[in-house]
Length: 280
Image (cartoon, rainbow, N blue to C red):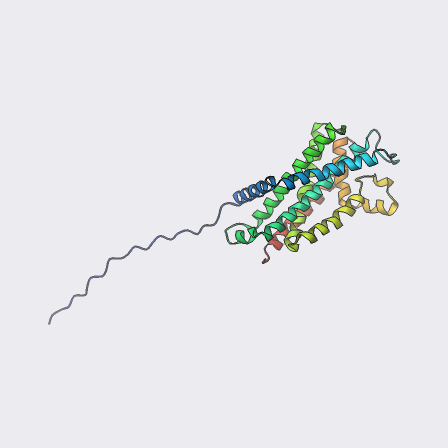
């Protein structure tokens, strides 16, 4: 009886090593790249840069030239010109307008397809939102610098506060722009249309600016409007920036202004991420 030997087994083929899944770059790198992309798009569009700088300058010139010739109200600060009084309010109004553009920029990204492409990549949802916030902050900082330079060289703006106080006033204005920017980014993430977002900004910002201490002291407003201005968050913000720049009473409003802005920013971040995660 013969024994049949089994055929030799074929040599084992080595299994290819598992390719690690690409998890994407770090969140900070994503924010940096997306911020640079949006800044380059903004700089290469002359219309955005030009009209973004013209609007606050026109508002400043109109307000100062029209109202500076009128009699000052009884509770107007002594030794302060109307230009010095109203400039912090113009800067805060400009910060609000710049914040609104952050929301509009997010809506444009949702329309032009960049959001859909990014969702197919390992990109953190908050990276694009943070990039939009930083772009709005840069835009607001440039506008603040231009407005203050023109006010000092052309209109004779000379605040009583020193350079450090003026820098703190500008920094607080930027923080206001940052917090409102997140509020409008959240609105853009939920509305996803530029027209309703701009209408919302007009409905919210316009009444809040005039029902505040922006252009007239609260004590000189009608009783009902003064009551509204007393609880208006923009009154705290404007009074604080004005107190820093002009060395006038109102610095006690700085802490409430910072707290309110921080709450708005945190709530805006949470709402923006939640709205951004919804399917397009």
